[in-house]
Image 1: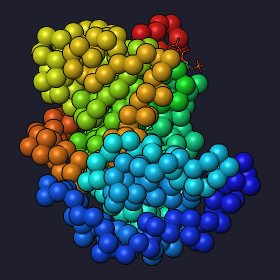
Image 2: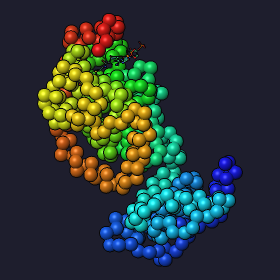
Image 3: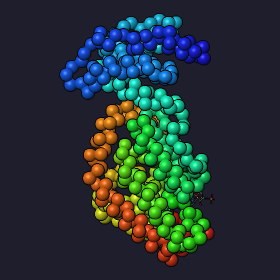
Image 4: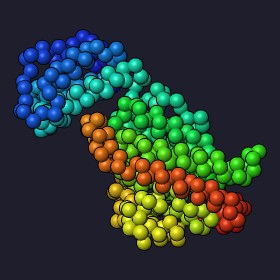
Length: 393
Ligand SMILES: CCCCCC/C=C/C(=O)SCCNC(=O)CCNC(=O)[C@H](O)C(C)(C)COP(=O)(O)OP(=O)(O)OC[C@H]1O[C@@H](n2cnc3c(N)ncnc32)[C@H](O)[C@@H]1OP(=O)(O)O
């Protein structure tokens, strides 16, 4: 296998992909009038590919080859090479795998792929950790990019991915970097059996020099900044809810574009139990999404929803069986990430922009109310109770 891969790699510069790189642009067939990508864009992409500084790897080269053939000749129409003709058989397989994809769609995919490669030609491999971004301060958050998706993973499974103060800061930084990176889609997910158990209740135990008031003030500022990043995030933002979700990890879901959940997930906002009040703009988004009485049951009484219930109420987009959750969701997201990124951004903008001002105002108000709540006896007693392990929610 290693020998075969090496042979493929050597063929890159010695003509393996001669046709997509070197076929004269003028010889190409021009498609119908309703093309999204013009022939000129396609020809430019063919030229641009020659300027790449780095070898994009065999997998990408095969993809480019197949798309080029599909874009210029249509579905695979030549006999399958013999078993021992490894290289031509691999190329044929890649082309044939595109099935009946139209020439226009192939051309669009080709242009998108070349533009992504050009944009990242100064960056490391798209499969690598997102080293073009500032990496989080601790291992509790892991940011990776690959297949057109930047994934922000909560990685504190022994604490059910509870959010420490440092993690809020790291998530803000990760979202800011992801908003500018080349991945069309950004995902938030968790490691282990939980999506997230919400705010780490020990965040409130290390008092700053200014005492509880200072702690409440700085937490309210951090909360507001954190939620603002979700309100303002400019690209498709997807939650891959891999298990139960509690508190702020539930409320922010109303600010995501799509929420996929395993059937093991539950959704729980025990604010009253904790002497607290809603955040993440949920006092506005939840009544809009599920109606005011269903929202009240969650936000006032802490009713825990199953994934199916959350889906029926519009908080979750789709529920998947746990056994196939990861496979199905990532396959779907990879396919979505190949859609034209600018079109997705613009569509999101149209959907979300008129709400932004309202959401910022709601966020500011919720953060202010919580600042008071955190100083209340109800809240302090509830946190003390959790920490002394006398009661669990
Ligand atoms: C800048 C500040 C912004 C604040 C925004 C306001 C946010 C509000 C909220 O998010 S409110 C919700 C807060 N979360 C909770 O109240 C959940 C508390 N946790 C639990 O109820 C349970 O731990 C559980 C139901 C999530 C899981 O129960 P179980 O399966 O029995 O596991 P354990 O309880 O043994 O948990 C394992 C381990 O994790 C620790 N842990 C879990 N969640 C939290 C948490 N939120 N904060 C701190 N620690 C948490 C738990 O203590 C265990 O630790 P241990 O093994 O005992 O050291």
